[in-house]
Image (tube, rainbow, N blue to C red):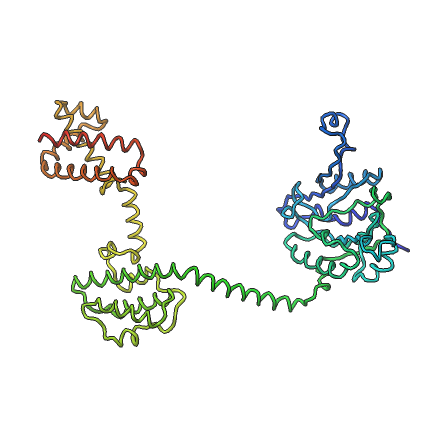
Length: 485
């Protein structure tokens, strides 16, 4: 008995996994596209608002599986004209490659009538005499599209992550059947084909299934069409991975070399400064070999050749109060091999026993704790003065206290004006009277530094306008305070 699918059975077969999920938490449903001119399906009320009732441009509508099958049933029952559906499904109502959710089938589109030697054959004749004998596997269905043919291979739906395998298999089909008029444009994953049972206006006939088989394929069943075995593919992947790795290494070495050289120069400058500080302290030996070793290691890591690294290390050696012997630089301090990763800053600080005081004068060889402390200090530092924000606020308040006191204000009135406790004003006056000359010197130096900072456009741009206004008022007030002792 010859097995022959109905039109709806074929559509259901292609999209049978539309409601299946790849994991239990997946709540996304599939959408299937129907492409046609929908003007004949518009209600008379809607047509009244259509700009051009004769405009029959095609566009997609996407449906869930049940609505899709109902729409297709109406198209088939009414033999509606020029109707197409997507063989793959989408996770949202957009028909783009990035929106594909399930890969469902291969649809080989044969426009054989464009080939001169086949143009006199009917679709059935072309299939029986040329295409069917050349097919590598039984098709799920063969459709007479009116003038051409569709050969459908439906398989159990799979994820879009297998798109490269899907496209590679499609390419093999194309290579095999290109001479029979297979359309290379029809291998797109968003491909649409005519709905079987719809009407082809150009051919003046109904699209119909002419052959079908009860197939149960998986995508991997078509791997036999690929020109390489699984083992060959694995070897090729490893070779490509190695090529990419080497290419990346070359790229990194070219791009990173300049950056590494910069870091190396700063590191060597820190070592040089450390030697100078320790020479001043009378700390002459016990760390020399380690310093030269670390310098050589860093230079080799930065891409210096061996001779140049030794030359630069010798210059550093000359900075010691008691330099090492020349042969010791190469023989005793040269690393056994070039390391891809040098000693960490923390390890260098520990091994060289770099103190907190020494770290304050270095750029790279600084511990994380010291950096955090420095950041905290910068955060609390006033943007225009080399003092903490707290110190500046205190100095500004004491300046205003003196000004108001000169105007004959009582401590209570000054406290109310400045919105502070009366005890704060008492303590401020007590401090100023006890350190009159020191206070005047600090205030004078601060105002001088402020005036210099206000001439720096970059610093001024970074400072809030209200703060600038407050600082200028303080400068004017300080001039009044300092003018009359």
